[in-house]
Length: 461
Image 1 (cartoon, one colour):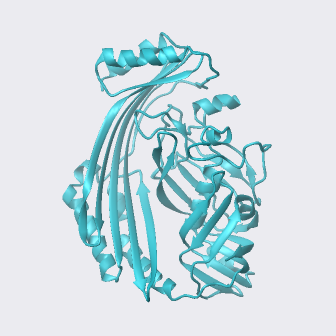
Image 2: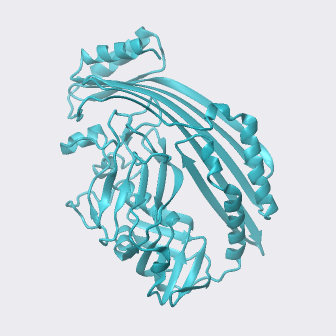
C-alpha cells in the first residue's frame, strides 16, 4: 500500500459524497494442529485490500484487492451510484483523529518458525498422552493485522496488531464413559504469551479432573445456593449481555443471521438483575485477545458498562447504529477482513469483580454446589433462555466442600440468573474465543471473563 493511493481513493470518494472513508487492511493467519500423536498439518493465509464507504442519500461500500486505479475507481463509482438511491442511512462522524499505534511483541510471530510451533504442539500432546488421555488435540494460531484508516473529516490512523491463540481438547474414557475438556487461550501479543500459560500443569490438572468427574455421583435435582467460577461467569457475560446489547440485534438487523435480542422493545434503563452485577466490554484492555486502540471505523476505544448495578446502561455501537440514537459511536465497529463491513461487535466482555474474597462466598451456604467450569452451554436466539452443564463441580455442605458431583445443570434465563447473584468475588480470569456474526459470517477475536459469583436458590438438575 502507498500513502498516495489511499489518499487518492479518499479524495475521489470525498469529492462525490457527503462523507467518505477508506480503509486498507493487510491480514496474515497461520494455523497448525496436532492430533493424537500426529501432526495434522498447517494452513497459511494472507490477504489485503481496500474498503471504501460513502454516504449520500444512503450508505454504500466498495471493495477492491487491486492496486490498479481504474479497477478501484470503477468499484467506487458503483458505490457512489448506489448511495444516491433513496434511503435513511446516516453515520455519526465525530472528530478527526491522527495517530499511529501497535501491539509490541517480544517473541515476534515472524521469528517463531514452523519447527518451533510443531515442537510446541508435540510437547503438549506428549503431556496429554502421559496422563492417559484417549483423545488429544492441540492447535496454535497466530495472526498479524496492519491497517490504515482515513476519512473525509481528517482522520488518519495506522495500526499494527499481532495475536496468538492456543486451543486444546483432551478426553478420557473409563468404564465405557467419556468426558472431555476444551480450553482456549489468546492474547494480543507475540509468542511470549504462551510462556505465561503454564500449559503443562493446566493439562495435567485437567486430565486428572476428568478422571475424577467420571466416578462422581449425579446431584439430586432441587434448589441450591451455587458458586460459579470465572469460566462460567465469562460465557454468561458474553452470551447474555454482550450479544443482546449489540444494537444491530436490538433493531432486528441480525435477526436472520446471528439472532435477536430480548432487550428489543424494552424501556431503558431496564433491570436485568441484582445491584451486585455490572458487565463491561472494554476493547482498550491491553493484552486482551480483543484489544484495539481504534476500531475499524477510526473511533478510539474505551471501557463500556453494558449492564451497571443490575440495569442496562450502554449498547455496543458502530458509527451507523450510533447515528440511529443520535450519539457518538463507542468504538464497537469491527470487521474481520478488508472486504467486510464493520459491525457492532464485542471485544473483551466480563463481569466486573466485586469486594468479596473467594473463601467468603461459601459463608452461609448450608446446601450448595460449586460449579468451577462448564463442559456445555446453550442459549436461545434472543439471548434469554440458557443452560450451562458443569464440568468440575463440588457439593457444599455448611460452608465447606464435601465431595464431587458430575455434570450439574443450570437451566435458567438471563433475568433469573443475574437476579440470583448476591455476592461477587474480587478475582478475575479470562478465556479467549472466536465470535461469529453477520452475513457473510465474520469471526472476530474476543476475550470473555469474570470473577467467582454466588447465586441464591438456583434450580439444579
